[in-house]
Structure formats: structure tokens, C-alpha cells
Amino acid sequence: MAAKLAIGLVVGSVLTLAAQATIGRLLVLSPQAVFPGLHLWQPFTYAFVETEPFGIIFGAFALYSIGGGLEMSWGSRRLLQVLWGGTMLAGVLTVLVGLFVPVAGAYTGGWVMGTMAWVAYGLSIGRGQANFWGIPVSGNVLAGIGAGFVVLNGLRFGWVSQLPELFGLGIIFLYVRGGSPRRLWLRFQHWRLQRQMQGRSRHLRVISSERPNDKYLN
Image 1 (cartoon, helix red, strand yellow):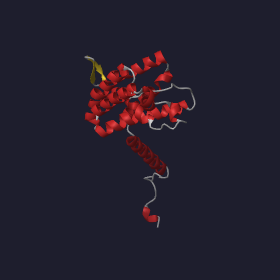
Image 2 (cartoon, rainbow, N blue to C red):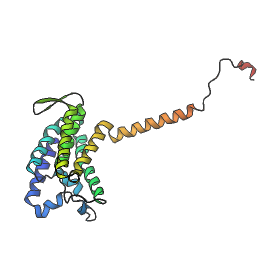
Image 3 (spheres, rainbow, N blue to C red):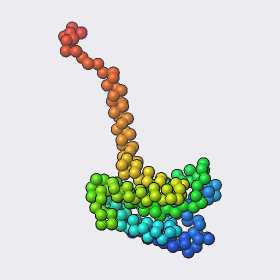
Image 4 (tube, rainbow, N blue to C red):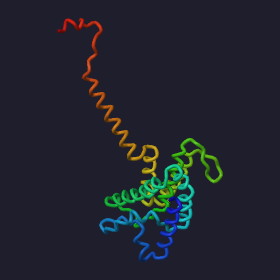
């Protein structure tokens, strides 16, 4: 699945660059085109589009290599749900922000998905040892480096230009550190059960050992 995502990014990017005036502008994420223009497919398609050589090469590399490592522990289905699903959710949130504040004209999402794979891989390792271009670092540091690229781009080009990436970072952090929606639901159920048990315990009374003999109660 990681290889398919990488190939999809390359194909979508080449198609966008080759037909920018027609198909290309329909594949990127334009908040104004999604609403009120009703181009509702764009949060799905922009994940496979990059228009800069750096974004195409390193995005595909991150999906293939780092995504492959995640796929070994997560499985193909979970990898697709988290990376593509998370990128789509980041796109939807960007569209919602565009309803209230001015945003960029168009967004690409290949590097959003690649960054999510990078940061997720680092966070999943945690304090364990990882490798960044031959330099041994912890998984948390590796995740921080991935997030650092987003921060630097935000400082250079403005935070509005990095909205999908910022949302993607938040989504992947909550997923890896907070847990999947199913795990969060189980935690909520556990918390609610504890509250119920505490409520019932308030109605219980401690029986003193000095009470009269039970035989006189009848």
C-alpha cells in the first residue's frame, strides 16, 4: 500500500503539471471551489498532487520508505485509513477555515500525507533509536524534524499557506499519542463506568462491628 500511495502521488502530480489549465486545477484543493463551488472531490484528490519537484520527490520517498515501515506494523488497511484519511480530514478542516478567513487559492496534499507518515513513524518509535540521513536520533526527534519543515515553511510563506500541513500534524499526533477513535471510545466507556461505580458507592454504608447482634433485629 505504501508503494501504491507513492506511485499515486507521482502520477497525480505529473498529470496535474501536464494539464494545469484543465484537469490539473480540478485535482488541487481550492476551498472556494469546494464551497460554494461544490467541487467535493478535491479533499480526496489533492492528497496525490504536488507541483514542486521537492514535494514530489521527497513526498513519494517518505510514503514509500517511511510509509513502508509503518505498513509493517500497522497493516495496509490502517495505513491507508490514517494517511489518506487524515489528509482528507485536514483538507476538509482547511475548507471550513476558508469559510471564515481568507485562505490560499489552492493547496496540494502530497507533502501533507508524506509529513504525516514521517511524524507518525517517529512518534511510534518514541524514545527508541531511529535514523535521519545516517545520524542516530530518537523517534521523537525524528518526528520533531518532520514537524520542523512545516514550521519553517510557515515562517517563510505564512501560516495560512500551511493549513493542511498544520492540521495534518495535529491529527497524526492525536492519533498516535491519543489513540484511534475506537480506543478513545473504549477509554470514554471506561471513564463512564468508573463514574457510575463511584456514584453507586456513595449510597453504600459502612456497617460498624459494634452493632447489636442480628438475632435481635427480628
